[in-house]
Length: 243
Image (tube, rainbow, N blue to C red):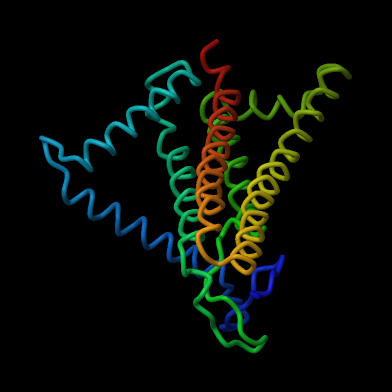
């Protein structure tokens, strides 16, 4: 049975930089998406084919969802690249980690035989990095939308003790959001990998298929939730811009 490790396993070390199996699959996901974007961009036509039509329908649906949350088509188009990138990248990472046979590739390192690939979101470093990016990006966008001082005053307000206390709570909320986002995604994906590993070991044929489809659904939902929380944060931080 494959060893279950909470920590991403190191493949090799270059100049003090540790290449882990989760980071390697993150690079693969990045190259896959870059290649896909390049191919789609080269094949864009005025009269769309089936693939282009499906992508346009998906983009339009996502923009409509963002518009309903942000209350403005202009704002939806403005913040679409950030939210869509988060959703697509996490989704691709989750799905690549669940491809049949991905866990079968092994690598002999100084720590013995380890899996060559591991789902990026099953590594807390990956989810924590995305959570920090999400929280920082939404706050920076808020500064650009309402101004740096009005945005910062939500967290550091010395006008009276009540406002100061509320500001501290807002600051704690932003820090808690980093923890919540990172551990929610990590916990669901890692638990799914452990479940699939055990099921494949106990009953390797047919029986694991429903669990595999379940984890594909979980990967989709978790990517969507992460993107939607980012979208809601953008909506909250830029709301004062309309007053």
